Image 1: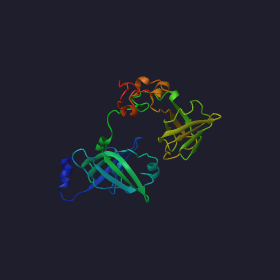
Image 2: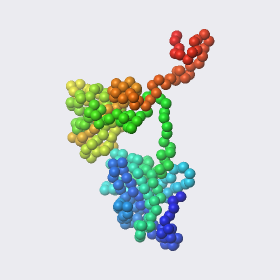
Image 3: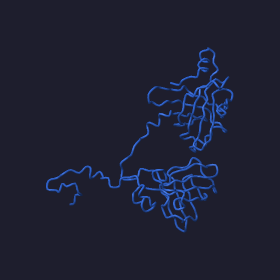
Image 4: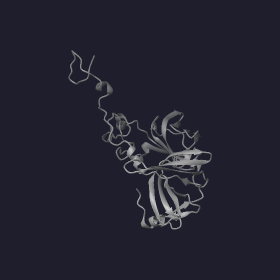
Amino acid sequence: MTAFPASLAAHLGGGATTLARAFALTRKDGTVLGFTDHDRDLSFDGITFRADTGMTARALQQSTGLSVDNTEAFGALSSDAIREEDILAGRYDGAEVRGWLVNWADVSMRVLQFRGSLGEITRSGGAFTAEMRGIAEGLNETQGLIFHGRCSAVLGDGRCRVDLGQPAFRAERVAEAVTGATIFRFADFTSHADRWFEKGRLTVLGGAAAGLSGAIKNDRLTGAGAREIELWQALGQAPATGDLLRIEAGCDRRAETCRLKFANLPNFRGFPEIPGEDWLMAYPVRGGGNSGGSRRS
């Protein structure tokens, strides 16, 4: 349970209280927003917690052990605070959240009651409801190695070690023709082979959609130097013509691709020689050479 500072505990024991809740939200792009359910702005820790957002917080559920603390915040979609287009664009996905119980008459009397991340955000009738998940949520993630024929690393991470900054593995182009924030067409783009960027990532570097990215489903040279790249899922906001894009090569996680495309076989994190399901389900038969070797008809 949260330990209350002596000054705040004394205030709570005094009968009449002047309490409010304050939340600080840090998006992955570094933007920090402060909200409070008090009727005036509050300021501490270098953050201004705004009262004009119409945001309210429900009671925080906390428990001992390893179960996940959780709560919810809900409020109006304010044009200059939380905007609907930013929610649709995914700018709040996985944002860090901190929540305080604070004496609005003296903000030095406060206690951090919650730390976690944003979960599901729902929108309805010009309002939003955001689920807040405690840090114990990370315990639900799968840990350890997976023994599989394909690589378990993410292209370019510390285990893979491929430098995606090399020109061979990335390209920066301005958006020329965009359809439904999903399909990107380029008139002259032959610097990389057909299907080179499949399973890679497209990231918007400029314009209103800057910071958004999506996984690449298809990458095709369509003739006369033209190229078409299709994402698995539409970006939350469509880039405008002229916005700068970064397009990174993709990997299908096969050992052959690691060797031939990236020259990175020493860092391959899969087990290409692991027996398949047919071998695991095999059984000894009479008259066969039950030596453990491959079975030939």
